[in-house]
Amino acid sequence: MIEALCDRFGIGGRVRNAALDAYAATASLSYEPQRRVQINVLAEFLEEGLVESDLPGTLGYGYDDAARARYESLLARVLGAQRALARISIVSGTHAIVAAIAACTPPGRTLLAISGAPYDTLRNAICDAPHALAGGGICYREISLCADGGIDRVAVECALAELQDATVFIQRSRGYAPRPSLSIAECERAIAIVKRAAPSADVLVDNCYGELVEEREPSHVGADLVMGSLIKNLGGSIAPAGGYVAGRADLVERVAARLYAPGLADRVGPTLGMGRALFQGLFLAPLVVEQSLRGLDFIAGLFEALGYDVDPKCGAARTDIVQAIRLGSGELLARFAAGFQAAMPLNARFRPEPGEVPGYADPVLMSSGAFITGATIELSCDAPLRPPFEVYVQGGVTVGHAYLGALFAARACER
Image (cartoon, rainbow, N blue to C red; front, side, top):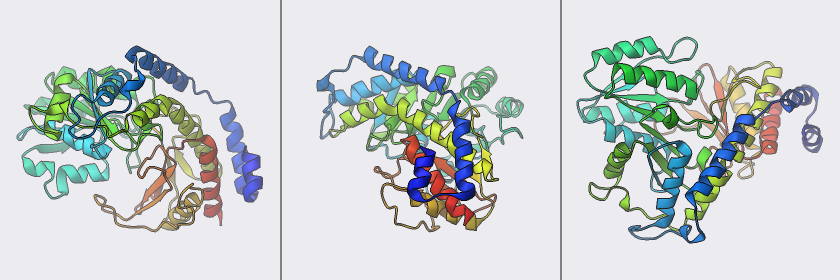
């Protein structure tokens, strides 16, 4: 396929040679964990026993919405949770995370982030924005990651020994930071420390970009709540909107009461005819995640062959659908973003320009031509204009599209 793409789009020289090498390097890679995830999701669909009449859903208040009830039951199964709240009215992963933190961290309690500073918009919502959570009476502390990118379990244990009460927060993905994403195994070790040092502490995990990448989810290893977006991994590029919270039943109830109203909790909320898209997206999600991982391995191999630092490297274990490439300058970020945008199925003739984005301290360059706005399971990239000038590539519904985006971006950087 690489030769055909290079021939069709006139890509030669160093980029073509590096692309052929990267393609050869990915040929022998195994994606066996994703195949097992596909089997697990198929099994959960069969266990749930859906019928066609479950798909339409309701309008209005959403009383007795079968699509909502069955989707949340199915999602809880897939995520290894007691209960799930998955709604199209939860507009983003950040919305789901902030709602969960607010519901589980009453005034006077400490929110302890043990995976370093949260990504820009979330930290802004916690600390700096008007009406931020910290302004409502919660205390906030964070613990930096170790030099190797792992959670500092000694520091976590010491911090919990000092606190009377805490909600512990873990962010799996790197966000816009030069740090590795966290594996389920790393989360498991950290959660074990938390539960030993502070048995009453609730552990909340930002699961964005990580769903279905590994065989286990955070709920399988002791997380009390996991939160994320339905237009990333779990949506399979089909879900039109939404976010989710899943985990312990009592905590999900708390979040539902905060989002809607005490006494109503999760018993309202129509699916507005979108049930079919939610179910079909989840059915396709394991395959789409596998395609993303294949594309990201190629992108890593291509840009490393061209002399750039990449993380993760081609063939390394992946724990999310994000690829970091350290370009080293604002000029190269602009070239990369422009080349990448030229490969998008929508808005390919647009040229990305850095702009202010709510919640970010620095201007951000973004390339995206998604059929569902913000659906970063579709191929996209983001780059805050700040050192070390890394670009973060996300998703890719088909590996062929990831190849093309990488080729166009590499050609632009070489000019």
